Length: 440
Image 1: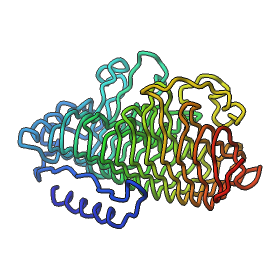
Image 2: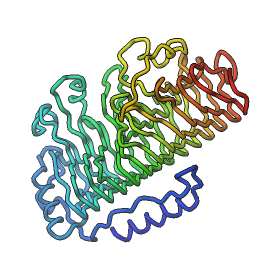
Image 3: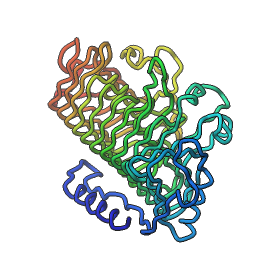
Image 4: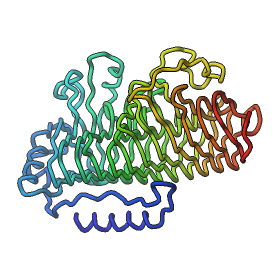
């Protein structure tokens, strides 16, 4: 295992050397990978049965405990279907799911705590050097849980829940139909996280037959994060992070259904130095989204998006600071006009006032779902979004791009084409230049 991780690390270092990023990411260093001892522990040796009938919780946990007692190693699930309840990780541990193996969460009527406790499935806290690898599948059997998404007091388990851990690798596995988030990694001490070659699947939240709600694919907050070569289509955020996040690279990913690559909504403690590059978005509700509000804001800065291709997305670029507004006038982001936005009331500046600055877009092509707008950047009257650059951005949409309460927005060599024409933007309380000419 250590040899394989060393090869992967060398590959990531080569990516970093060849990658010419913008701003703070130009000196990007990939995360450190976990070090796992080369010891193998098969769950079958501890009583697990891949018959899709046996509850293997105790057997799989016993295998993990044995590996931890020996200083760590690789816990292997051979081919088969293994039903299981919540399990606790340990240090220096890799849960390896072989091709042909399915680790299946117990169904809702047998899951410990049901919809009250909401025990997460694979849990780690304050650990180091942990991994989930292999070409097998983790199946959350989440469909019966999704109807509880908006039921007060009902809780749903997350599939992978790691808190305050360091040196994390999730590689090649397929994650599907989680009751709630598929990957949830966070905590103020989280660092050095790599998610590579992972496939994630759940129905769209707009699916007419079986919608999945809050089935986020990849929620990772912390520092030194790499998400690469993933294939994602779920019912909520395809990626998101919250406050306290820095030094993130998302590269070569393919996104389908979902709410796009997001930041927020809680951005307290700040978010900085994020690059999203060489990704595709198809039928995604939003491509790029940054969201927060006056009660949960922080500084979001040095964010770079480049070499992105979007097809039939709901909105390619959505950056706003009024996420929780309940007023119908302001809530419909596809329809809000400059005149509507201009009436948004100013509020006192506090330590939770959002600040967005230094955001850039380079080489982006997008086509937008019929009847929708080309994008929206909407700051607050007391906190303008500042220093936003568009270079070679080409968007085709029915309705214009809105820029409200923003300062120093520059468009260079762009073609944002709507029913109003080329680069005909909807603007209020903003300073915008197009190819060096200030818009009036």
